[in-house]
Length: 534
Image (tube, rainbow, N blue to C red; front, top):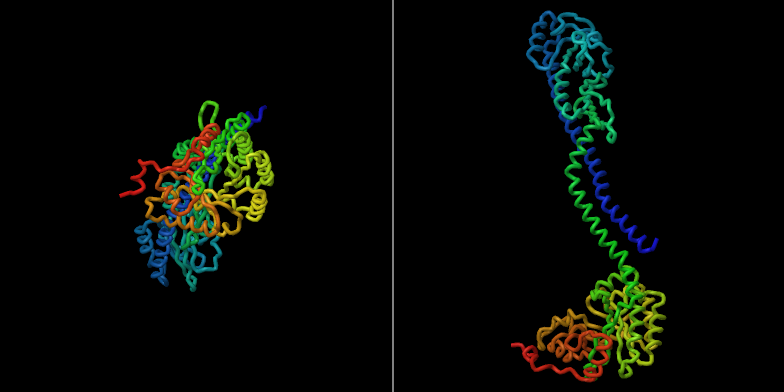
């Protein structure tokens, strides 16, 4: 399989995976959210149940407190009062009085109905406390319906008890859990569970039942809530129904972004390589004016890319792509090959400046110095002054190694310029650290010129600093006579911009050099109004 086809197949796979990623993550998120939603519902249900159980417990203990007024009174004197109190108070199945471990009297069973054990149908709990509550499966009178008993035993052997019917709790539990299929269970101390709801018999294929347990902070009451897998599945479907459209949109957007990224990532490298082999790149040259010599004294080489169909790729696009794809070094080497071919028949005087832009990646490449020396050898018959234009960020990384490379090249006559000075991350200390020859002032500072008598503090500071450091200054992006005269008044020698000459092809440059290269710049008459604004 051809490498490009493999890359395209790989790209398709990445795009599909990118599209699937939001759906997969969304599915995971919805499952987690469904569990969280059901958990929160269980927490809410448990709080409600515990609140109701605590209220019933409050009623039970309030009843016990009210019964203490019958302390030391014989049962035959209080039997009617017990029956009346049991009838008038909600929740209560029976209330009564204890004598040691026997039920002395009861509102439901009369006098001496039997032992406490017989009434609650189990041994009383051993708590070590004078008061306790317990959920029971039933009582002697109502054996098949759960209840809760509250007991307060006094030091003299007497005590009081109250039994709350568990049906009240069961009705409340059913009202809470029936709609969601919960299995609810409540215990007082370690008593019998009071339960409602059916145990899930058919397991859900994807979701297991979710259990939540909690206890009261006021009484020894515990609640257990089991949400069936079907409830989790229902909650998941609800969340999925809301999330799915958003996930689909994110999926499409991510596929588009991934496709665009892969197109740049995979195809730019191949396109640049094919363009080099197909000689789609050419070099344009923008002349540089020397104000002292009053003529053109150099040119900057600028790479251009034109596709076979005539489409022109902007330099900022393909240079950024080349840097991102690791193709900037091959592209710069190709640029120097094209320049070497173009200049073979140039008719220029010795010392003509030829400027080449060098990327930071190439400057840090192990073969950078040898690449430059090979280029110098190819064009030595023209006796050019080769100028390397570096961006400020080129000096930040591996500063010592870069300084050694630049020193080695300057020893063979190559000049070094900082391009677009003032717009990058360069520290002023670098101007002292590195061996430099020129500063190219960024066009943004040139554009700030508004009048000959006005001031542009940053521009003036850069010019003055350059002179103090004995660096030549080149003003780029000069487009008006006002800008030209402003720079001339401040001693800037080298001028570059559309006002003097635009970038042009090799053939056009050779004609231009013969016709206009030796001529000085003349400010046209129609520019006079711009030089003297009212």
